Length: 317
Ligand code: GLV
Image (spheres, rainbow, N blue to C red):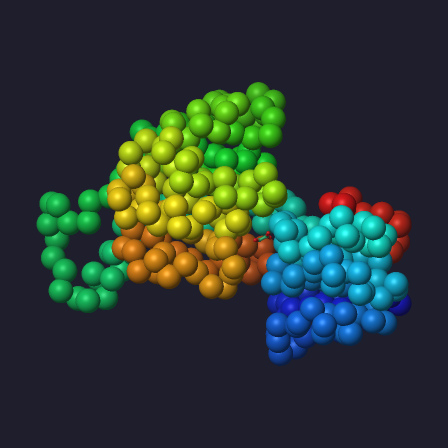
């Protein structure tokens, strides 16, 4: 039986599944392991099932035991792992695509709506109990009849597009390449980012975090948006230059912002917490029971598939 380290606590049925097919080291207290602890605990292991909270950088990977052959990330994103360093050490890295698409797209809609319809202020008023209905009370922005720009038309971006269309929005997008018509489903492709920004009354970030997308939303790019645009990010915090965004939120260039992900999670830029027009969630994209079980089981299956066939379809490096 292969031996694996699971770095974070999983939903019980997935832990039981892992225990059935592997000699499994669990983290029952869900203590965040340091890089040193991951190295030590995986010394006698064949594989590691990691989470986005584990920073497996080149230095950590260089110190992993030769016995470790696979890092199976419990996420679709894998920015927490230096995949090139892993390749150099002949360690394959896998992810969990598809199974979290719907849950993440639902959160993308929630933060777009939360920002547009001033849900943060609404909740605060409701909690204070001294609100009264008025024709001009907490007036927000309406999704229907508006243009939604989507950055990144992968699985999640397309699932957001499907949902936004049922809200009566017109879809525009930028992607590394233009999609086939059957995937585009009427969405309008913009080759340049500036062109996409300029038509985005609403905007949803759904691209992966890479060197190219880091701070893609910055002081300069923000100027291209229509005045009073509503922005949202359900992908990774890296895509936004927070200081530039805060300035645009304060001067009204950007009407409001919905966020589920942050630079340097779990910390959140203090202005995002203070500003009334920022609707924040603590990285809940895939947080439904159905999805978290599907993700964990897929991360386990990826390891199993690799050891059975010496390859895995969800390899990313
Ligand atoms: C969640 O953020 C993921 O990448 O799966």
